Image (tube, each protein chain N blue to C red):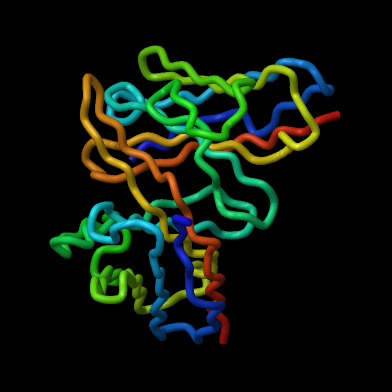
Length: 124
Length: 110
């Protein structure tokens, strides 16, 4: 079935980097953008950025510019999210999500399949 | 970027109707379609409504969405115990070139 499987929990010290993977199966990996969203405990989801797995084109939320890098290895249907310069407030669960984008009479853009999330803890 | 505002909580007894509002701006809801996500404790968000009022396959028809201007709403009719969850509206945002999520509403079934 269609699914996104994420890598396991990570613990990092402040200033370090973390790289989370998201492996797609059950569909053509290059046919859908992948978005990344994070959620701190007790907070709502926060959008980080998206990547087109076919072209590699990316777009990042302004507040993560310079710290966030989204990449992919299409040969193994896997997307990656790397966040550098980690701070304690980067502690959160990070999700990847398959994105449906289509234009009919209106513009549709939504996340239909989500990974289960990867907990990242930043602590000294 | 402004974040769409939702009431922090809503509640109802089984069988009742509950409505959740989502108030945005011209840069998000006012110019793009609205999606709704349901999040059960400890799980990933799940797509509930897309394109303002479309239900993905498998979502019960007791969930419905609507949009007017810069606001949207989600209605749950015939509330059930398994509907107890957090609900988030979301919309593509001009300028951000990405999705913005609402502040979220916790629905409690009394």
